[in-house]
Image 1 (cartoon, helix red, strand yellow):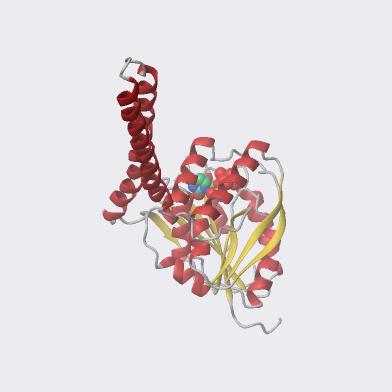
Image 2 (tube, rainbow, N blue to C red):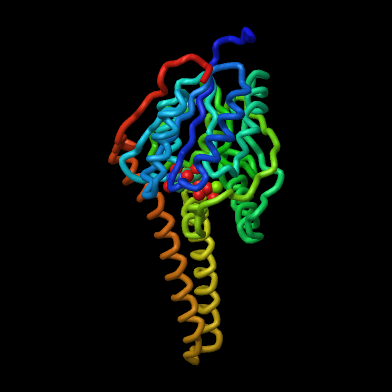
Length: 320
Ligand code: UDP
Ligand code: MG
């Protein structure tokens, strides 16, 4: 036995309908954790799965004393599931990882290494995206660019939620009570020393991704509206520009009518301008709505989630 300080690592895994991969995932994760010289707990957060995921988690719980179960009362979405797991995590460092084996558990020792080097947030950065369409890669790239331009937080590109957080980083995250949790942004927003570790991302092993373009679009809006009010400023400035344009156009018409009389043309330009202004106004009302909607949900101050049950890891020795 090495005489490491008695630190403990928590692994937080949000799971939603992952019955096909979960046993494999647990197997691969266990192999990695067994090589570590300190204790660990694996927190499976069942995010209201409709398949046999919960039954699988419970059998893992019976077989492995390191497993803890957080069972949410319904599907709350990955960001909330993650948050619930972070609330329950007791480790000195917490690793957040997807269950679909797109995040290789084998990288965890490397993350822990950087943590020992004094970093608080060690995130896994993809050096390659296999099995994802060109369009998904391109839209993801575009999204990070836009976020960097508009937001005040610089999101690391090609980074999922797979990362290690030190205790104080987790404590910092746990103080955030907002409902609209754009985790990728929040991980960066809390600050502290952050460090990237490169890895090659595998295609999903089995099962279906829960992301479609509509969800990704909403995810992007979430990211933008929870980190920047730039669209609101954009709205005011475009309003100003359009108004100035309309004013000069009006002056031009006034002068022209005074000089040449009024032959009553201009119906097409009139319609174009009306439609254009109507569209611009509706769009900006929509942007306002996005923010007001968020104010609305945040002011209700509802709890983030409800638990069906929580099974803490059974206290046992390290060895199986
Ligand atoms: N997940 C979840 N709740 C949801 C959707 C997903 O807990 O409502 C979990 C899912 O089981 C997986 C992780 O979040 O462990 C990532 O989901 P997915 O693979 O669908 O996302 P992607 O890798 O495509 O970003
Ligand atoms: Mg995935």
